[in-house]
Image (cartoon, rainbow, N blue to C red; front, side, top):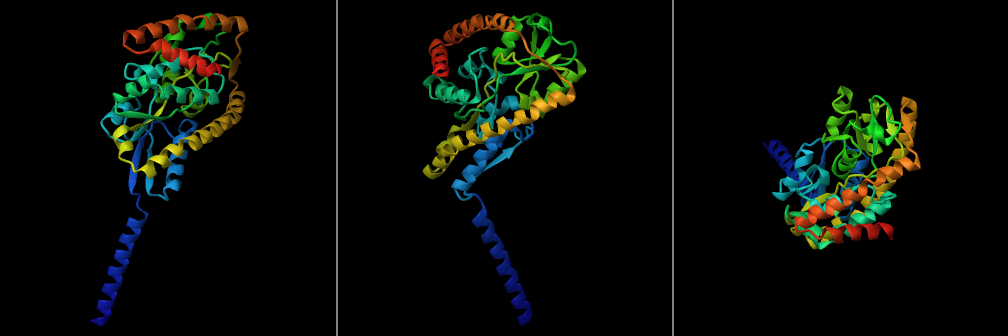
Amino acid sequence: MLTKLKFATAVSAGTLGLIFATETFAADVTWNVSLWGKRRAFTEHVEKLAEEVKARTNGAFEIKLHYGGALSKSRENLDGISFGAFEMAQFCASYHADKNPTLTVLELPFLGVSDLETEVKVSKALYEHPAVQQDLGRWNAKLLMPSPMPQYNFAGKGDVPASISDFEGMRVRALGGLGKLMEAAGAVPTSVTASETYQAIDSGTVQAAGFAPHAHLSFKVVEVADWWTKNLNPGTVHCPVVVNVDAYNALSDEFKAALDESVDPAIAHYLDTYAAVYDKWWPELENRGITQIEFSDDELASFSEKAGPIHAAWVEEQSANGLPAQEILDMVKKTIAE
C-alpha cells in the first residue's frame, strides 16, 4: 500500500510539475498573423518581427504566423482585422483600393522610387499623415510597417515584346496604378491573385504578369515564362502590415514598446534578405534561357509620359472623395526627392 501511495504521489507531482512548466513557458499574450502563400522574402520582416518580440519579452508575447490563407483569404485580411478575427495581417492596397484609397498613392506609376530604402522612408512618412491614419482607422487598423517592394517587371509567355506598342491587346496581370498604366499602353489588365498567376499564364488566360522578382520565383511564374522586362520599372504595389487597434491598445506598455521597437530590425532583415534574392534571380533567368528585354531610353520616356494623366486622375478622384489628395501626393514626391 505504501509503495502504491508513493507511486501515486510521484505521478501527481510529475503531473503538477508538467502543468507548472507549461504555465511557465506559455506566452502571456499570443497574436495571430494572417498571411498568404508560403514563407518568402515578402514575409521575412514579419518572421523577424515575431522573433524580435519574443526575445524582447522573454517569450511572454508570442506572434504566430499563419500562411497559405489559413486564417483568411488575402483579399479579406483587412476585413478580418476590422472585426478582430486576428491581431495582425498583411495585405496589398490594390486588392481593395476603395477600402484604403490613401495607400494607393504609392501604387501610382513612375513615382521615382529608386530603391527599397527610399520606399521604406516614404511609406513611414505616409503612415504618419492624419488622413491616412483616419482612412485605415475605419477598419480598426493601425499601420505597423511596410513590405517594401522593388519595381515590378513583367514575365510573360509567348511572343517577346520588342517595344512598348507590343503590349497593345496583351492580357496582363497588373493591379492598381500599374494596371492603369498598362491599360494606357493598350494592354488589358486582369485582376488575378498571386497564387492563381502560374496557372493563368500556363493556360493562356493571361500572357504576362507584373511582379517583383521574389514573387516570380515564389509563385513559379519563372517556370512558365519565356521573357522578362529587365528595365521597364513602371511601378509597384504597396502591401503594409497592420494590427488591430483594439489588440494594440490592450497591450501593456512593455509589450507595445517591444512591438514598436522590433519594426526597424525587422525591416533591416527584410532588406538584407531581399538583396540575396537577386543572387538567385539572375542565374535563374540564365539557366532557363529567359529573354531579358531592355527597352530604349526613348521607349521608356514615352511610356513614363502616360503616368502624368494617371496621377492627375488619382488626385481628382480622391479629392472628390473628401481626401487631401494633392497634399498627400506632394508629400510623397517631396519625400522621395529628399
